[in-house]
Image (cartoon, rainbow, N blue to C red; front, side):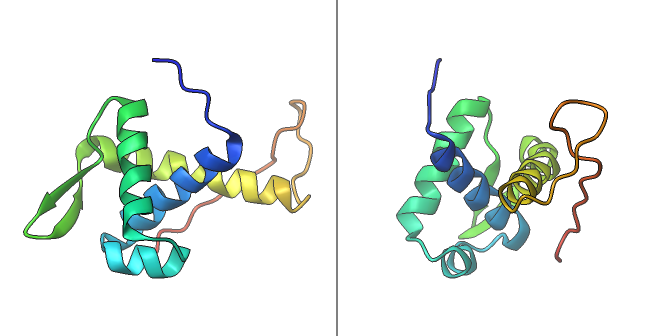
Amino acid sequence: MTHESPPSTLYEILRSFTTLARTLNLSETVERLGVTRQTVRRHINTLEELKGAKLFELRNRSYFLTEAGAQCRLEAAAILEQTETWLQNKSRRGRGRGSLTRVTYTAEH
């Protein structure tokens, strides 16, 4: 399946995914992002479709990361951090053209 999403859409999808993966709470995710529940659900459904795997399980109205979701979480967070660093013109050129010297991620629990 070929999907040509505008970058801003992919960015928002990744923000929804990483925030829900961190909080595991839809209401908190909605509040943090300032979007609707439907928007977060649509973003997660789109990402699951693109990745070809379920990223969350919903049991007793609680979210849990699947194995695929856990594997995607850190990578998605790193992509977001790199994007934000680049957008703020804080990236440093490394050996590779336009690469970042270092990207870090700290999980909030």
